[in-house]
Length: 252
Image 1 (cartoon, rainbow, N blue to C red):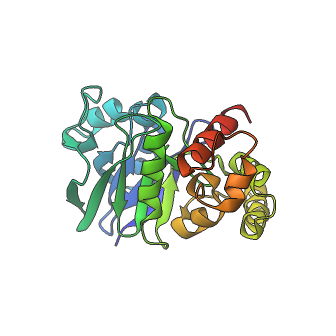
Image 2 (image 1 turned 45 degrees about the vertical axis):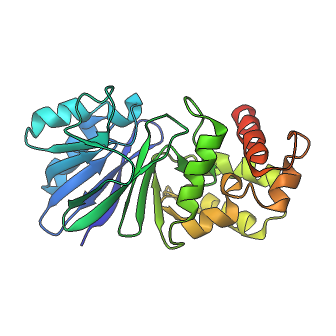
């Protein structure tokens, strides 16, 4: 049975720690090795593998140090030249097994062109593609690519837990309310998140069903979202609605 916990890093990053019953573990997107090494020592854990979603420094900065500390570990990541520390390169629809759990790979271009996500046992590790209430900036991909990637996530089971890599929820929800001020579920979630954060608690993981109810970037097909961006959109297509959303969020 895998348990998941977060290792905070930098200002708002989450490095995800997946642990089995035998004190072996995997980390996802270790941008900084130091908090990982400290956590492993404090909990008496052995690191077996690293999962990488994309190449940005706050996700891969600690990989080389962790490989040096654990020379036999496996490093999973995108099949691309800019991931020199990856030992097991992955492509869309690949599957591998860790701790008797099948991990399914999803290519999710948008934030970066070679971004991947991992889906296992109703858990989604999505890096910077999907956030609670938002989505990643389009540093390399197109709005069409990101919309397709997010649609792939929307098709996952509603109970899927979403383990994104940043605590951006409160700022994302302010934008979501600007789009859908009358979304009851959204407004309830805003209050819940404010309460959690006031207690120092994380808002992550979220879930696919929650995000489909409150996240405008998963709701570009909804009339209320189309209406919310009509003054910025050229037409009412889902893609133009999404494009207008992303462009507005970039300057919000």
